[in-house]
Image (tube, rainbow, N blue to C red; front, top):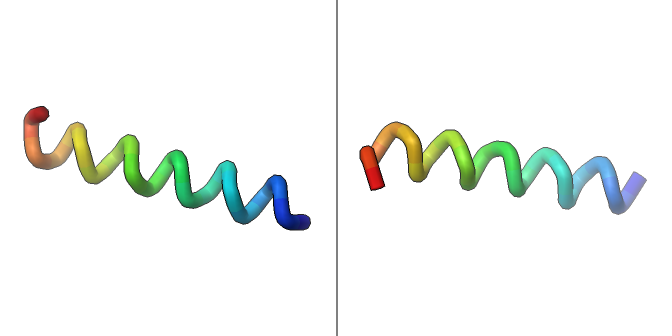
Amino acid sequence: VLEDLFYGVQMMLDGYCVEKGN
């Protein structure tokens, strides 16, 4: 479960970086 949460956070951060265009 913890790994799934970490994976979700990484995906969210990755999408955030893409949205910022960084």
